[in-house]
Image (cartoon, rainbow, N blue to C red; front, side, top):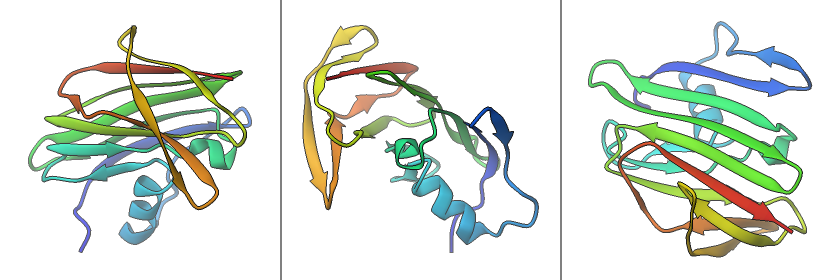
Length: 150
């Protein structure tokens, strides 16, 4: 049974603002959160959180996502931006560790990856026809990752 979460979720799609429609059940919401939004609780109360935003697959250039468990104050929030040859995610939450991966646009190559302004190492992982940029685990805090693409 999926955990119950309080949700604040929106994405900017073609200049229009969309929120979650009334009446969506938990299964559909969790498919959206863990699929397209790419937020997965790997621990308990977001103590370890995986962030794998897949907005690019839907042609969505920006999204603001917040997921929260009201009973325990566990949460994860991020702002995703993609434009030109850049990807960016600003994130925070109650996690002791974040596992961050980016779905890369088809045919793109990573030139540089920065965490909080400092260049960091990364690796690539292929899943079927998609490439993901994989970062080393990131500790608790407020962070920004910037990816320059070629």
